[in-house]
Structure formats: C-alpha cells, structure tokens
Length: 425
Ligand code: AMP
Ligand code: GLY
Image (cartoon, rainbow, N blue to C red; front, side):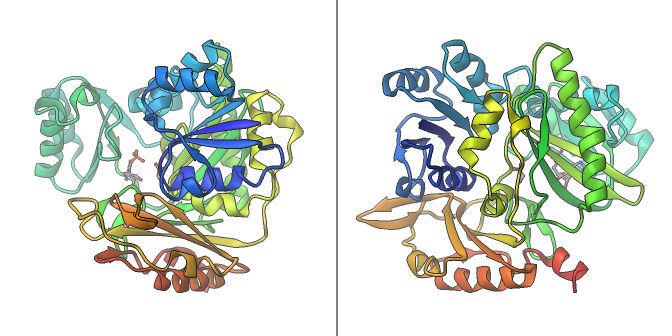
C-alpha cells in the first residue's frame, strides 16, 4: 500500500516510524514532513493546507490511504474534499472536526449528552461576558470558540486578567473570528490526563492513556506550550476511570455523530481533568495528541497500518489492541526562549549516539538537514523517547539519551513523568 501522512511534527514522525514497520506498506510519503521523517518516508513538498495540491498528488501517485496528523486540515475539510474524489483518507469530516474547531460546539454537545464537563456559558458580547465574570468571580476560565494555536484559553486568577482576556478576544480580536464567541467556564482543579480513542464511526477503542506536560518550566510553571513531554500509561487514569470515560464520553459522542448523519471516523482525544468529584472533559481534539503520540505508539503491538485501515473501512471491531507491558517517556528538547522568541539554525549533534540504545527513538519536530547535518528549525526541536519496564527505567534511559544530544541554547524539562514517579514511589 502507498500511504501519505499529512503533517510535519514529532507526532507525524512517530506515526511514520510506526507505519514504516508494516509489512502491508509498499511506500510511505509525508507532506510536507521534516528532516527526521525523511529517514522513513519520501517527503512531498506540499503544505498541509493545500487541499488541491494534495488531491492532485494523491491521484498522480496512486496513494491508497491518507492519514492526517494536525487539526487545521481536518477543520478545513480535507477529508470531505479527498473522500469526495474517491481517495481513502482517515480522519473526521469538516462537520465532525467542529468538536475541536469550535469550543461552543463541543461544550453544547457535552451538555446535550450529559458528559461531565465544567459549567459554562457562551457569549457573543464582551459586555455581557464581563458582567458574567464579575458576577461569578475568579478563578475563571475564558476560551475563544475557534482554533487559536493552543493560545485561546486563559485560566484567570485575577479579575483584571479575566477582563483583559475578554477584551483581547472579543474587542481587540487578537485571534480574529475565533473570538467572535467565547466560552466562560468554571475553573476546575486536579490532575490532567489524555485519553485518545480510535473510531470507525461505530466501534470505539481506547488507546493507552498518557499525560502531557504543557507548561514550559519544571513544576508545571510558566506559560503553556505545545507540550514539553509525555508518558504512557498514566496512573491518573485507572482502569475503572478508563471504562467510565469510554461509556460516558466516547460511546455517546460516536453514537450522536452517527445519529446526526455525520459518523465520526478518526482519532478522538479527550483532555481530562481528574477533580475530587470525578473526571471532567476539558476539551476534545479530533486527532492524535502531540507529544502524547510519541509516548503511545512505541507501546502499541499492533500494526498501525492495519489498525487505521480497519477503522477507515468500518471494521474496527475485528481488531484487538495490544500494548507492551512497558512504560514509555517522551522528553521534548526545545530551543531556549520557546514558546516566545528563540533562535534557529543551530547544529545538532549526538542524535545517532542517543539512538544506539534500542530502547530509544528520536522523533524530529523542528529540524532541517543542511550539508548532511541536522540543524534546528523550530521551537520544539526533538522528541527523545525511551521505554522501560517501569517509569523509572524509562525515565533513566530517556534522560541518558537526552544527555547525548547537544545544540547551542537547548532547553528541556528535567521533571517529565514527575507525577507518575511520585504516585508509584
Ligand atoms: P483546552 O484547550 O480547553 O484543553 O485548555 C488548555 C488548558 O487550559 C488545559 O490543558 C488546562 O490546563 C487549562 N484548562 C482548560 N479548561 C480549564 C478549566 N475549566 N479549569 C482549569 N483549567 C482549564
Ligand atoms: N498535547 C496536546 C495536544 O496535542 O493538543
């Protein structure tokens, strides 16, 4: 089979690495991919948002299956466009992708299906939103409705911060139309975890649980990032909670989309907060998580191509997911200054030494190859991933590998997995 993966981050490198192990694969392509992905796939120089370019390429090359990594092409309707032309593509349609593309859509669906989530109100007027916040008090959470590159949520711990967020979103329109509506939500407390499912629109199966580390600094301090590391599985999600999340979140959502005449096919990610009153859904993503995927896929025993194909062909019920009885850790190496400004073009050394240990993978996020050597080309640069028989062994192998890698002004968190390590001590 000829398979094309759309995207260019660490998640897509992990997807390509896993797909490349499938005996069913004849050729792997990635659009646009990155310098690490190039080691397992042919790079195609077409941006993820260029639907017509991708469509033409799929037809010309006779691509048998397209797998979409990031959310933007999904919310822009790439699945509808390619499927409409007879190309097999795995992911939700534009309608189903609203679950991530619109927080209002997601919150209203959760309310309709009685899915546990924070109390909320939706506003189209800044004045009314401010009145509501003044009445409710702080802390409170302000979310723009549309996609905002992970920056559209403010957890306000002071009244001026809450008012400022509403002003920036709705009056200044810093996120453009994404801020036409805002969701104002009760502030929840607890440990966060990620639960990701794969569905063919009828059957739902959960992948192994994981936990991201969103803040830039150790101890979960500082601004939010795209994710500084992850590990799988997480003790925050017990088997009982997992079953509850399947029964009360994923099964009703998949049934609802089917009933609406728009079956949800793809990966579906629920961001969960474990509060003292039980779990709450913070958000949905209509794709695999980044960096969660990098820590989940190395644990998957199944052939990923077979799994995705089964889901794309509505026979996911034929598959039994199997997981290695190992812990897996992903440490993100970033450029100092990220998520604000940072330098690029730094020469990277030590990747091949780090990879000498068979328990280690290095997935690239922001790299380019120049004169045969890797250089930094983004804020999040590399994902170092290691497996072990316990979280401690996985952490020790992963951080040892991180120590082999060097570029000027590299930064990484030294406390990935700290929560799990504490619980299991
Ligand atoms: P979201 O994009 O909705 O997941 O929000 C991004 C981050 O904001 C989450 O990972 C949480 O850390 C935080 N967050 C979102 N909603 C809430 C909430 N209701 N209470 C507290 N923190 C929240
Ligand atoms: N790790 C969070 C996300 O993928 O959105």
